[in-house]
Length: 99
Image (cartoon, rainbow, N blue to C red; front, side):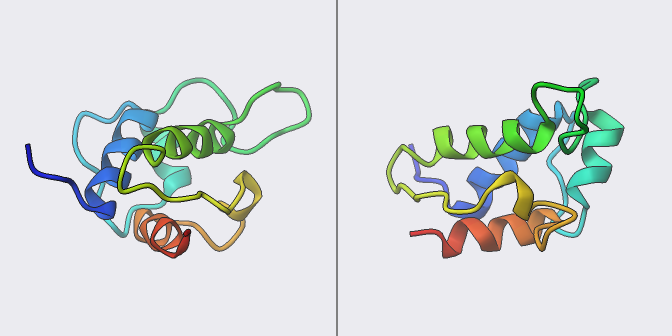
């Protein structure tokens, strides 16, 4: 079985996280994907929810990238929209820059 690159792995995580019927495109915004396909959980913490979609996404990435070739996901849910990580491509870049 061929090894998947970082981009393929991030796309797979985003697809599963947002429960999408297709792979996301690089320029698609994470918040829009969640609003369109995701569960009834706030995208970012809203003061009432005990969990937010961004936290779930970080946990999913950490789980995926425990496997070789591994990455230490060193960004947090706060870095995701409204932070600098807004699109799938931004997320791929952030994972790529994690060591």
